[in-house]
Length: 204
Image (cartoon, rainbow, N blue to C red; front, top):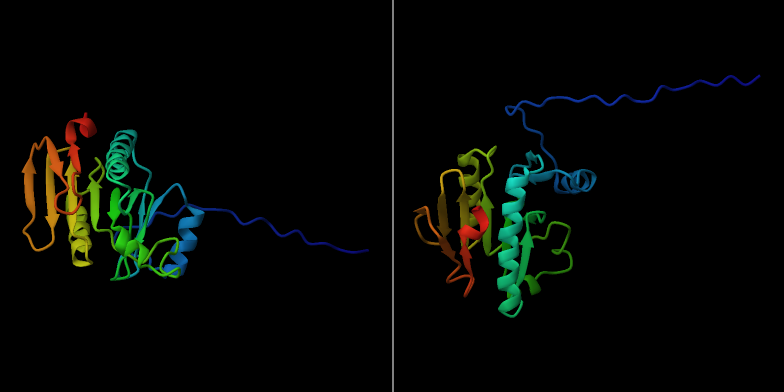
């Protein structure tokens, strides 16, 4: 008689991770995690710490879609210059962080200069232009730090849009952060020639 042994199935348990505890992952591990958790927006700091962002609420999702849509329309009308990306795209910055702006643009010259090895799942390039949209659950200081990180890694222009306070922070290379109260539109000059974002279309 052959005796068989049944091995019990592994039970999946949920574990709460306090903010004071950081999980560190390599770029390869991050890529594997991102592929296995497509419903989450994952990011990685320059120190290798994993950041897990839950799916956005419908309001933020709609606003993100509108911003990316306006950027796409500009891109199409101005001769498809460079590459435009939505919030699902992650970039590997020069400092090793992997970040996903809500909308972004990379110039054609810089994109075409990438090697096939650089054009990985999370391309090794910084966006020339980035947009971050603050949701109701976002704390402002981490977003401001993220915007400064973009500039420190080469970005030329960034907008931090805060619908809760009707305020926009403009980050630009070589300039102090500019704060606009209740602006009606934003200009992408001189980085994105001819791009005007009318905020009434986005936030209403």
